[in-house]
Length: 582
Image (cartoon, rainbow, N blue to C red; front, side):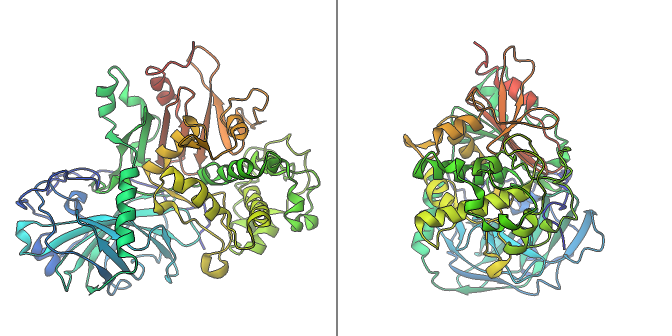
């Protein structure tokens, strides 16, 4: 069984050779105008997709992208796409990690799609899909449908997807493509060419026979309408190169600096409501659907989910919520060797419960033999999380425990149910009360949970989301610029948010071992080289996920998997746009 953290290393080594055909964009948002269908194509041709071809590797990712010159689709896909013989077809090359990995094929795939009038192919199920496969879960994102003159009247489609290890935050990103008419589909070509993990990387590819089951999809009109609203709500996006044009003199090399290129998934800089995005490279070119390329949250979930949950509960139900005692909502604390008599919700959010084995940096956290990391079910996970002895007064000593966040989720859920009824769920609460109003898309509406009820138990909290760039850009503006408000209405408690972002001198949080601060699940480091005292609050995730909220109202984020954590160069460059010091 893989632990939740010992999972895969990205390699974004771009393959050589020219792209064929030319993609209209590195994204799915385009074209603004359709072409004639006159597309030059050498890869994944009509014959390749109808007859098949010998393949010993993936192909250039551009061959799966919407190309320049594409004509509007002549057929409408609505129904189920069923892949056949997944367990026996396809190839895999392990680049790094376990050479004996028995994960060489896709999980069973039989999912419904609808098509919009402008050629978007929208899956009926979004977010994490729990499969019956022993190894993989799925995430499916919207794709495109279009016509090319060389496809003999058939319509061509592609869509992005990802496979996710069971009980893991790690993700492998891929794309699939096929031809179809009103009744049938060609063979389906799939390839996985990128991942955000820590110890494993691999290419997967292959042809699969498939079946098209045309028919009405439940809620089809609502799915189309919801996707149109999702697109309209996307933050304005430009390529990172445009930043130097919009802000002459800025040092573009500062963005992505300090991260080994083959470890980078994507990165972005947010200024004046525009998200400037870079990266999205794979081992075979640029990913065709950059805006839908998902990366794991790891511990950024602690701030982006659990801290947000406490801030929303406090705003909704009163300023006393952070000071409630954990023992009153988690009765299992009575059996713990630790002292929980005075530990508050806020103490857990600060990683300062006072219950630990050692305060040495990350020693407790990275004890991978701890049963907490493999328990999977809620009750034993909670028992394992509570096994630490008393070590200090609560609120005084920072010791990082993902298990403490799990305890806090349990406590907050019990509190939420005391206010909103026995069926209330903490993650659903955040989705409905924060993510939806913020315009975040439905790909973020599911999270990793315990294995109870077919993996539908308690949300883990300390990890288990999958971000796209738009999610982090919106969250950064919401926290750092809009002060936790949407349309002028505060969703988050202002005092808690102010403290988390190092804006309250009276509540700087807890000093971290090795320097810096930690407050309400946000890391903070003191900036250097800016001429005045500046603290930069950050969301940070294990593999190399960073969301830095700069005090001048800009933000820089990236997803990577080489465990490289740095934002200082980007912070100094951002100061050239809006200075930090008077």
